[in-house]
Length: 268
Image 1 (cartoon, helix red, strand yellow):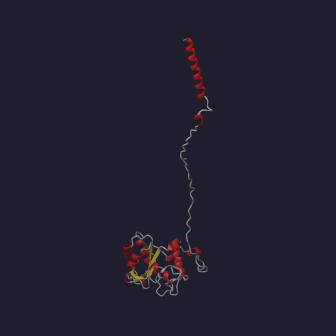
Image 2 (cartoon, one colour):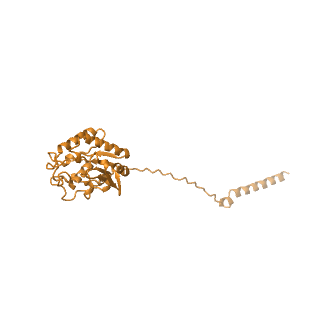
Image 3 (cartoon, one colour):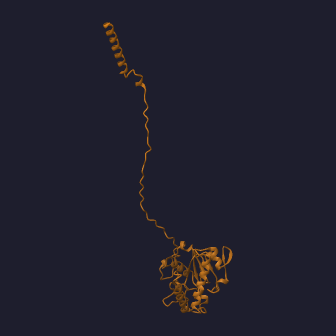
């Protein structure tokens, strides 16, 4: 019985020894030939970009029109006759025959920018019609239809000898109020009357200056942008300079309008 038991134990040990060798063999194990795939999860790469902006100065060149060679009167700085097309594209004028020079003389303003005619006075302007885009309109309707950005009113000489300074200023206020009512976004300017030459047949510079000063003092609180062009065309005695004067001593040469446009654009 003991012998049988020992024999069984011996066989059991041999059997266990064989299983241990098989399980420890990596060369013959089927598992050693199975490749378990390594799954790599790639996270999206977050890139932070820092943009550095270097401030740059923006310089907008002011477009200009230099005066034609030889057109500047002797003794005058050419810079006083340089025009600005960008400024001129946003303006319109209302006035008499002197004002109409802006559209009569070539290379100045377009006809649609100038509502002016001969014999117009501050008290008669509502009796006239003006051409705009081939249509005929009253001055109020011209402004209502065209709606210009800036309007310059320039008149008065036709009635200077029989109009009081009070009436002149009152008529200007009345005109501006009626125009403002139909085009509230428009900015209105009142231009001073210009001088005449000392030899003009009805030389009236004393009265002209009186009306200019009274109107400016009266209106500057509500219309601070009164444009005084009297002095830029006058000599030391207050008379219209001959280099700017037309033959009649009252109307103006083309160079005078260039001087006025330059002054309006640059204030000098």
